[in-house]
Image 1 (tube, rainbow, N blue to C red):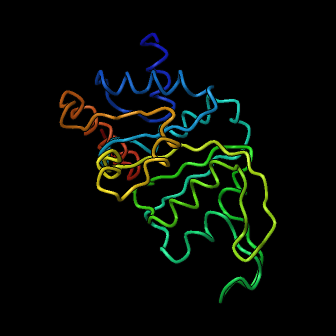
Image 2: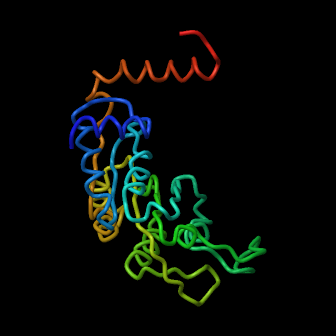
Length: 212
């Protein structure tokens, strides 16, 4: 992909930097976006993992449909099933109405599961079943509902190590990583630090109407 196209994408999505690894990841993301398979994005905190799912969605056939981002690590463990799959009225204390989960809300579009490595094992089992069957059942319900959702997941954990340690299901890992992207840490792209700092300062000046 030519540099002009890459720079245009970076400007559109607020990506700062010109490291070879970043450019490579961006090029791959644009190539796999039209291929309707799951994508796993790996990288340390602060490398911009949350930007790539949006890019993939916007350059796919699903771009006219719902894009929904969910931070798996921020969902209380006791409510994960309800948040992801929905619940029926009266399914548990506090369930005063029927509610669709994230899968149903994102039907036809893209569901970004951020920090997917934080999911507990029982939630991993249920997520795998939904990805395999492409159907969800609300908590407290009996009727299965078909869902058509593309999954893009991200994690700051090394899921290969998590699988080896028995903390992440191997079959779920393979299901999520039909395509895998790894973003380079900032320490490998020190030449970009100047641009990142300059961009940050520019944002501060603009926000507070400060002179250049």
